[in-house]
Image 1: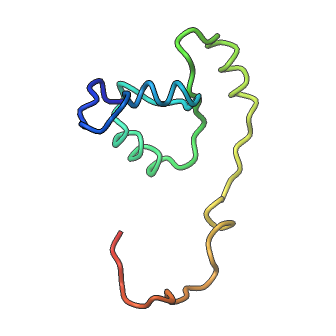
Image 2 (image 1 turned 45 degrees about the vertical axis):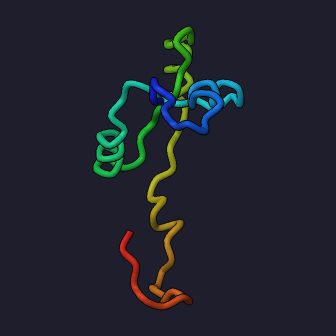
Length: 91
């Protein structure tokens, strides 16, 4: 979450918006490194906690969660098909 709201059209900071709408956010973390780690390791357990949360209780809950395996095979198409719009795109 940026610490300085610098757009001239803004009425409040991103942090204030997220708090108002009850949306959790990350601060002080290299999200690019996190994405690289997830791409390398695959599905991993994790939790976002408020600073005053009971860490031991939340870790206990996390340990009891069983993650599904082989999700890519379940959500991917078995055969390739062309895009109806044609052409190529690089993402």
